[in-house]
Image (tube, rainbow over all chains, first blue to last red; front, side, top):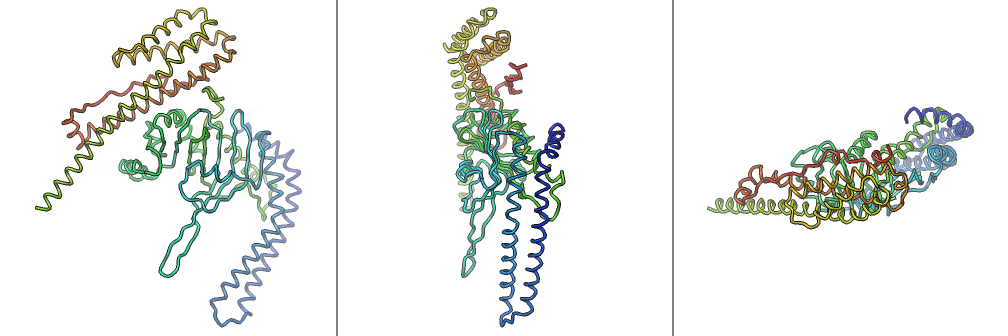
Length: 322
Length: 185
C-alpha cells in the first residue's frame, strides 16, 4: 500500500475493525484452547493405541493411528469453523468495503469453473475445481471479480499389476477477471516463458511448434519476450491489445507480484491468474489477530488485486468501448 | 552407396523445407501489408464523418479540414507509389492529430456526443493501424532474417529474394499516443 492508503487504512483499522477484532480475539482464545486440548487428546490416544492394541500384523498399526489423527483433524476443523467463518464475514468483508463500497464479498463463493476454463490459460483437464473468497464489483468503469482458485487434474499411472491415481495441482492462486477496455474478437494468451528463457533462440523455435495454442506472436519488446510467450488467433489483434505501453504495464505488474503470472484476453475480458503458495484471507489460531501487521497483510492483497485495474489502465476508455 | 543416397535425400528435404519457409515468410509479409491497407481504408471511411461533425464548430481550422478531405480523396483514388502513399498517410495522421488537439478550444464540440463517439473510433483505428504496422515489421524481420542468415540465404539468393524495408513507425506512435493526456491536459 502506498502512504496515503496506509494512513487512512490505519484509521479505518482503529475505528471500524478493532471493536470486532477484540470480540473475535476472545473467541480465538477460547477456540484455541479447545483445539489444543483436542490435539493433545488425539496424540495421547495414538500413543495408547501403539501400546495397548494387540495385533498380529504390526503393519495395521499405522492405519489405525492415521485414522485417529484424521478424526482429530476433523473435530478440530469443526470446532474452529465458526471462528474462521466469522473472521471472514466480519473482518475481510469490511476490509473489502474499505477499498470500494461497490464491492461485495462472498467467503464461500468463487470464480465459476466455466469462466476459469474459458480463459484457456491452462489446457489441462480440470477434475477438481475449488475456490473461495470471491469479490465482485466495479472499480470506476471496469467490472471486476476475483477469488482464490485451486485446480487439479487426475493422473493415473499404471505400474505392473494395478494403476495408481493421484491429483496434480496445476493452478493454485488468485484468479482475476475484468472487463477489458478495447473491443476484440479473437483470443490471445500471455504465458510465463519457460523455453525461451532456458534455451534462447532454439526455445523460441519450439514455441512456434505449439499446436494446441494459436499462432506464436513475436513482440518487439525484448524484456517482455524474455518473461512471456504470447499466442493468439490473430497477429494484428494481439498487437492491438498488447500495445507497447501495455507490455510495459504487464512487466511492471509481474515484478510487483513476483510470482508466475498468466493473462488471457477473450470475450472482451481480461483474465489474470497469479500463482500463490499461501492460502489468503485466513485467520490464525495461536497468535493474536489484533496485530495491525496481520490485518494489513490481508488488506495489502486486496489492494493489489483491485490495483490491477490501474496497473493495466483498464479505466482509460478512449476507445469506442465505454 | 545407400549412405550417399540417404544424405542426398536428407539434403533435398532440407532444401525443400527452407524453400517453403522462405515462401511462407514472403507471403506473411505481403499479407501483413494488406492488413495495414485494410485498416487505412477503415480510417478513410471515418474521415468524412469526422470532418463534417467538426466543421460546424471549427471555423479557424477550415483550411486544414479542407486539406484533409483533399488528401483523403487522393489516397482512395489510388495509383500512388508505395512511398508516396506512406507519406500521404503520415501527413493525414499528423493533420488529424492537430485537429484533435485544437478541439480543446471548442467546449461545445467536446460535449457533442456524436463527436465523442467518432473520436473514440478514431483512437481505436489509430491504434489498430499501429498494431498492423508492428505486425508488418515482425513479418518483415522474420523474412529478412531468413534472407540474410546461413544457410537459408543461399536459397534466398538463388530465388532472387532481397531484404525488405521496415515500416518507419513515427515517434508519436511508438510512445503509443495516450489521447487522454492529449485531451484532458
